[in-house]
Length: 532
Ligand SMILES: Cc1cc2nc3c(=O)[nH]c(=O)nc-3n(C[C@H](O)[C@H](O)[C@H](O)COP(=O)(O)OP(=O)(O)OC[C@H]3O[C@@H](n4cnc5c(N)ncnc54)[C@H](O)[C@@H]3O)c2cc1C
View 1 (cartoon, rainbow, N blue to C red):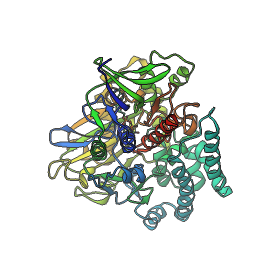
View 2 (spheres, rainbow, N blue to C red):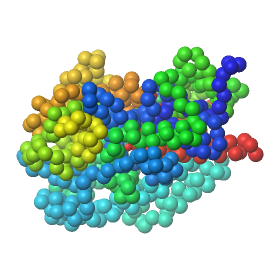
View 3 (cartoon, rainbow, N blue to C red):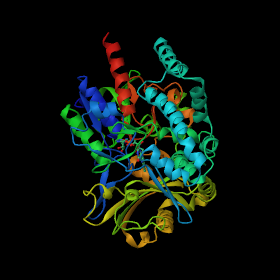
View 4 (cartoon, rainbow, N blue to C red):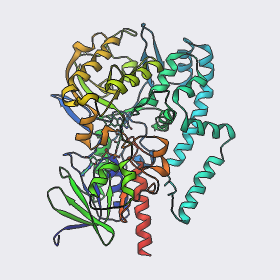
């Protein structure tokens, strides 16, 4: 221990939030070291080769939530980050050969929706306006530290500030906030629309990374969580990062290194070290110790619990009960040609190939996939979103060939009857490919190679406990001041000098950079106080 390296802050994990946090701390003059278990930085936001000559984002695959302040402060554009908007948000082929396209401007969407219901098309402007008003509330709260339950005067001030934001809303918006945080996406959408395709298109967001039926209470919040982002200043839009999601975290790495942050990859942290009732460093799996004035964890809250195995306390039970399962399977495929959709034929690239392709034609279909997964572990007709980033980015696949990201919902972490993902991985992947092939008959024969990540693989590879893509469920009992648990909603963990900067903290999952940004602010606030 006498020769241990010593920093102002040591960060466990170089996910995008760990990198963002490090950048802010280093900018304030702190010496910072990040230790990452994987050989590359970026956590769930990385680009890797998965088949010879074919690269793609491995886990997260599309951008919207990345906070504009983080993009600016970390000079991500100067480091080469470029995000290309989708021509429209979603293309949803329907069972009997029809389709709906959503996004690309209000009028275009209204024209599409009117093919199914004129009434729904007329209601769209009001729908977007009401949803945007609530999304704006969320936007105004994401960069705030939630008031901590049991905190002091400062927390009372934060509670007053949050309350004031809500109180300033017109009554209708207050009602919408209440509904969107509590009711089901199905109920919310059925109040607005009568035709299935538009409900399916909007409702899909409610089941992304959320093991729930779109008719489950609370699912409307998950829908909302997917609309508070923006791309290139355009609210609610989604885009492709050129070079894949790894382009974001490689830009962050460059900024961190420019600010003097030391990054160590390929080394796991085994323990947080405590002395005199404070965190004072970490021990690596190889035994080496790194001392620091504070320890910051980018790891999942339940993974952090394991790093604190020696620390008793009543807080342990609430961390153990932290819910973490999104029931998600992620697959990359190398393709010899583009999928040719029966509903909109053609193998040459068209705008729908550059949008988010949703293969889940109705809310009832999504409800069924959930019910089947509850019983059998996963459904043979899964909910699939497909993106084909090689249509806008020629760095990912050889000329004329393509890569597709398949993001598939309702694959449980724990399979029933003692079944194991190690035996079932390829069967589940085949079911996903069959599902896409139902809509695009050439798909199966176009697949040249694939990499499949079951929920168990997501846990093993990225440390996502229970395979949860968001570091824990986005349910009301795990949001804002209650994320990850009540009493620790302000980035400060049960051991003084220990902080949480990952997606298990407010405002939750997604490639946002916000937990990293907010945690750094709280660390610097404590540092200032201790100097005083
Ligand atoms: C399959 C999938 C698809 C997704 N799709 C999208 C999407 O399209 N868009 C979007 O915005 N979001 C998406 N998400 C969510 C988003 O990727 C995550 O919420 C976000 O990347 C988490 O970032 P983070 O920095 O908080 O944590 P992580 O990215 O999980 O990083 C944590 C890091 O800590 C490291 N670590 C953990 N424990 C230790 C230890 N003991 N020692 C050393 N290192 C350790 C891990 O290896 C990891 O690198 C997706 C996630 C997944 C998994």
